[in-house]
Length: 285
Image (cartoon, rainbow, N blue to C red; front, side, top):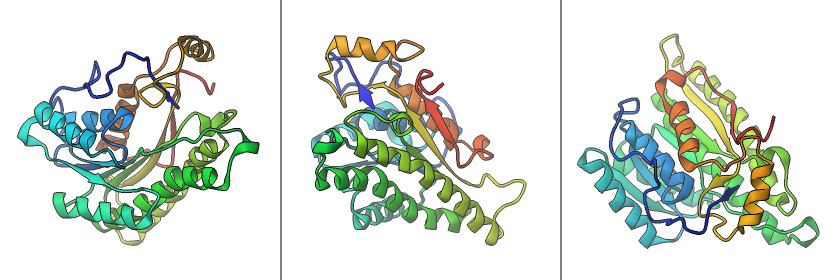
């Protein structure tokens, strides 16, 4: 779930965003971030790039915004890091496989996949149509499966990789009017644990797991209420009520999600797999 104040400029680099390469934890790596040209996805891309990763950003339809993201990225990180943008529908297995193939063709490798793309169609249960149900599940859950499946084959062959899913606090606690969204985000937990087990099994079977391996890990990050453009028109009174239900009494920032993703993507996190990381101000305590 994401909300923002009405005065936020969705096209500006948010305050606190990295403004250049500041570390080398991910030097030489390539990351594909879906929903990567705005909001949490753009912050994740900037955070990974700040540690030396080149970025492939997936997007669904706004070509102008994608091109602006790429231009801003180049002005921020210069010619050292490559950035590409890839249009596609994550609900389509064919599109997912095509995008992964494009990334491999244009970058030569894929080290990190962040399944961040997601949509909401909010209605109470008795008003949800078949189309409302399937569209949200297809994008939020099936898309993560199709992309992870395509990336996994490449990562197993290379013997290393990171797959990081972006779920939601709603997948843990539910929410009125979001049965489809909650089901899709909860489904990522089981998907994460199964992919993590199979990734480890496949590496072990191919003899690519040893004491010095950085492995192939699969984890999920679960944001709480985050200040983005997803729900730009939320009234202040509603925001105040939301904050009252958060132990830390504030919304999270996209950068706080991005930092956890960057942590999980690093080599030093190679003993963490199949886990769900809550970043929600204590809402699930």
